[in-house]
Image (tube, rainbow, N blue to C red; front, side, top):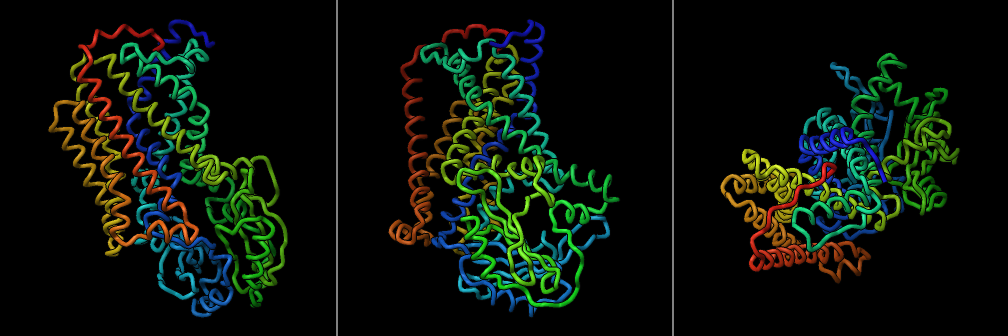
Amino acid sequence: MIHLQKEDTKLMVAVHGWSGILLGLLLYAVVITGMVAVFAEEIGIWSAGHVGTGSAFERPIDAAVRDLARRTPARYHEGVDMFETGDHGLGVFFHRHETEPDGALVSRGVYYRLDRDGKRVAEQRGTGEEVFGPRNDDALSSFLVDTHVRLHVPDPWGLLLTGILGLAMLVAAVSGLLIHRHLFKDIFTLRRKANPVLVDRDRHSIAGSWSLPFAFLLAFTGSFFSFFGTIGVPIVAMAAFGGDVQALNDAVFGNPAKPDTRIVGIGNLDRVAADAIRRTGEAPTFVAIENFGRADAQITSFHPPRERGLEPQTLLYDGATGAFERVKPSIGTRPSAGGTLAAIMAPIHFGNFGGIVSKAIWFGLGFAMCYVTLTGLRLWLARRREGARSLGWLERAVTVVGFGLPFALVASAAGFLIAMPLGTAVFWTPAAFVGAALLAILGGGALRDNAMLDAMLQGATAGLMILLPILRLATGGPGWGHALGAGQPIIVALDIAFVMAGGWMLWRLHGTRLRRAVAPPPAPAPALQPAE
């Protein structure tokens, strides 16, 4: 039990309520897009119809990379980044680091994309920001991730905004914990036959209490990622490296060594990849080569955490010979508690440390946080409905955002499925989202009955979800037999998940209509306790 003085309780109630009201809708947007972004990789596979399962680093890449090096100007051999693209193709970025006139650090070079047979299918020149935009086949997953990370607000303001929202979640979580006078009783209390306001209050308390540890983790790790690059790195670079961000990156993430500019061959990359997979049990997610073709070249291979582990694995190889050197900390040159803590931030935030199981748990907890945020806003409005008619606009805004945002996200998936075969998904994916969002806003302005608006948005979302698998097949996506035969069950699983989710929403809406049809006029809601 948590005991606070009466005045302290009132203060915590005010902090909890106003922190949710001022930033609640934006916080809801970040959490629901994060919930979806947990499965961004799987959604990318499903939407683009990718049926490949073998990693690009499990196939021969050495000859192809050497050929690319010969056609790339030597000034861009300072660094080479390699990673998977599309249906297990390979992206290779030869680059050097430059400082723009405005002081911004950029990587400029030549970016190649290879297909699964090692053939070059695309070549772009420019900075990393210019060449790493969304592609036609990953426009949907890229859109979902970018919506969560920065709400499509230009850098650095988008990251700062999501960081502030993370702090707001921390405030709401702490204040929500403190105002519970009977915490352990409340997490098991659900009065199903009570007044609807009390039922909603009980559901809000149960969902919020059980998901409280997750809220702390999500808020803390999210704020860390948002503020790390926008505030942390510039401050540390200014204090310890005279403002040289590249020097900071080299010291923290690089591999300091005595320069040796002699031109030598590069070690066999196929042997390096095979050895890295043998040592870690996982294919690399990213491979970086420093000083390609020089005697001081070094190869760093990045891997997911081991089974039942949290910390990603990083291996270091001698670039000239391809010989294994050591296991490298993700941050710094020596293992440290701080480096380990920073390294596990990403797996904890994105929930990808235990494969599909941890992702499913994170999705469920994210759904609970969305429910807590939405019901909290509605409870706050319910307590003020009789005495503040002017807040009707806010109640409508909560409905438009609460149910219009899922509708717009599903519409963006439909837009992607239609546009991808035409090669225009990069434009139509966000355009479908904006169009659906405008429809929800117009509906909020035209309909005076908030319950009708609620039902229309949920019904439209459910209908689109059921339609998505049909659209996927109609636009040339692989059938279930093909997907299962290729060892890609995620396509089938998401088809079933969309139909079941849409069907559940329609069933729930039908039940709500029946209850309203037979229910007597509601009695006045009892006054809530001060801590509620």
